[in-house]
Image (cartoon, rainbow, N blue to C red; front, side):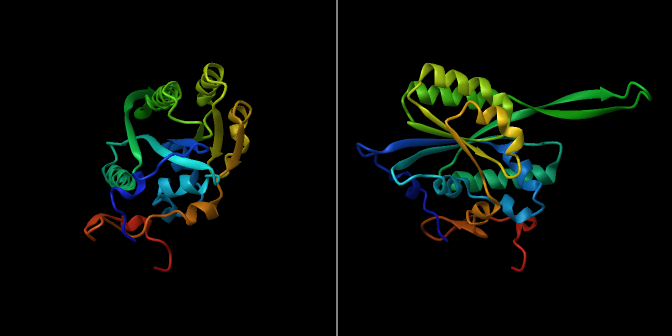
Amino acid sequence: SIYGFGFFFARTAGDNTVKTIVYIDGFNLYHAINGLGKNHLKWLNLWALSEAFLKPQDSLEAVNYFSAYAEWLPSASSRHRKYVKALECVGVTKHISHFKTKTKACKQCGTSWDSHEEKETDVKIALQMLEDASKNSFDKAILISADSDMVPVIKTVKRLFPEKNIMLAIPPRRFGIARDLRNVTDGSFEIRQGKIAKSLFPGEIKDANGVVLVSRPREYTPPHT
C-alpha cells in the first residue's frame, strides 16, 4: 500500500457532517493490545482504526495520539519512535510527554530501585479536548482509553459544551474497568481484536512516489509471513 501525505487531509465538511476528532491514550491502548499476546497487532494504523468507528455522516477531522518515549529502554524507544513516524505519515498528530524517574525503596530490606512514571499525558489530553471544544472543532469526540483519570475532563467538556457528543472506545478486555468513564460519556463500545487486525499498517509505508518512509520493526511481523 502507498500512503500519500496529502491524501488524508482532503476532507470537506457538508451541512449535515458530524465533525469528529479522536483522542488516544497511547499507553492505555498499548498495554491492552500487549495483553492479547500478539505483537503484530501493535503495528496499528490509528487513522484507519478511527475511520472504522465512523458513522456515515461523520467526518474525521483529526486523530490525536498521546504518549511518551521510554528512553531508558533503547530498543523499545526506537520501535516507538518508528511507530510514531508511521502514524505521522497517515495524518495522526503526536503529543509526546515524558517519564519522570523516581527512586523507590523496600521498607523491609532497604533495597532501592528506579521506577518511571509517565507525566503530563492526561493533562495534555484534557487541554486538547477542551481547546478543540471551545473552538468548535468537533461535534463528536471519541476517546480511546479506559483510564478513570479522564472522568473530570469529560465532565467539564459536557458541562461547558453540553451539545458536544463524547463517545468512549474502550481498549480490548478493559470494558469492566472503564465503568467510571462509561458513566460520564454519551456511549461506549469495546474495540474488538478483529477490528484492530483489519487496521494494521503494511510492512512498508511509502509516499506517493513509492519511496519507503517507514518499515515495520521485525518484532511486529505478523505470523506466517
